[in-house]
Length: 328
Image (cartoon, rainbow, N blue to C red; front, top):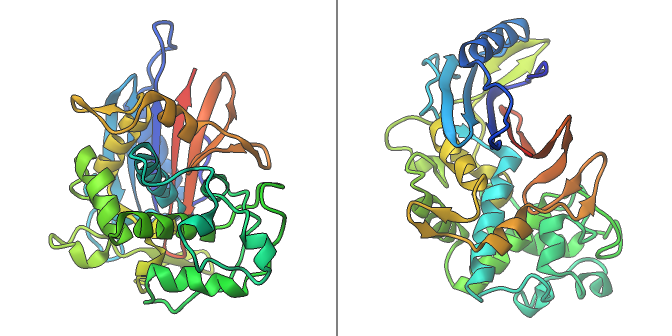
């Protein structure tokens, strides 16, 4: 594990699905010792870590304390930031498989009022381009109020200036996933939070994963930290419910271990099937060239030494995390 410079209460998850000729399994005790050393060196107050090896969880541990001073455990809740996009992509792909959405249909075939400042730029954008971050939406775009619903955030994009032609290039822009989630709301007739709970969180058994802090009845959601002059301070920040699809999911290391175990498979789970092998592979296949990676759907695909790597980070003012899958 390379050195981690973490500017917030942190989560790290890694998973290694390897074949019969896999190298020697990592030493959980050595990983835990490394984490403790890194947290102390970089003044990180707390972290939760899950490591999976050949489908089995070999390390699931909390370190340090959260913003309330409580010990971090594998069931401490952290806001995921942009790692939420992998959850959104899975929910969207389940709707695609069910015939409720089409990857290559224009956004406006579902969202009749979807608009950008340039009407001609908005018309050809497809759901596939949203998920691959090739829609041409700019890195920063107008937002609605903090407590505004998803529909208002998408409506605010009517003032956004396109940064590229649809399909021209990869531009990482969180509003892409807000538009995709709004398409899911309209196609299903249900709020995105409900769709996510019913099609992803429930079937995977992610009982500690929350769509809003208001659902935290057991007090597991951890207040985060921000750094001031190199030192961490507890910093509870307001929730933005309308941005759930791109940055707002709350989860734990224990639940993320389950989520990543599912991502290591072919779409089957607990004796059933959430996604076909073809759609699972399509979701994880990098197609949009970025800076040293190819963006898939809620995942970045690259090479780490001898391994194909699927990974995504999440950075918020008060939390930071990373999930990594290493595959041969």
